[in-house]
Length: 85
Image 1 (tube, rainbow, N blue to C red):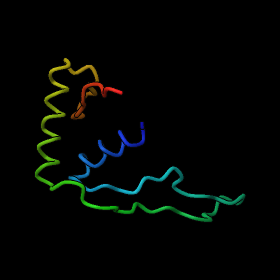
Image 2 (cartoon, one colour):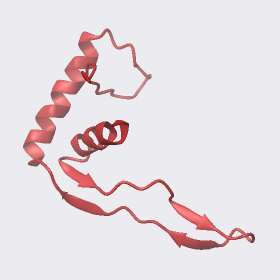
Image 3 (cartoon, rainbow, N blue to C red):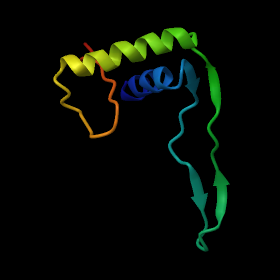
């Protein structure tokens, strides 16, 4: 699913640590005071940090191969090719 793809990319970017996904960061009342706040929660280490670093290097190299179509000045981009369904 798109959420699973996003979680995989985020895990690689987060040095191999998977975080619990959430859709709402906070709820505010009519007076704009916080009613509830969601905090980032670590689920587990999916891969060793060294593996995540290698995957990051490969994803940065993949962006170089695609002629940097996602380039943003001053920002390093890591990407992957399409996912078969």
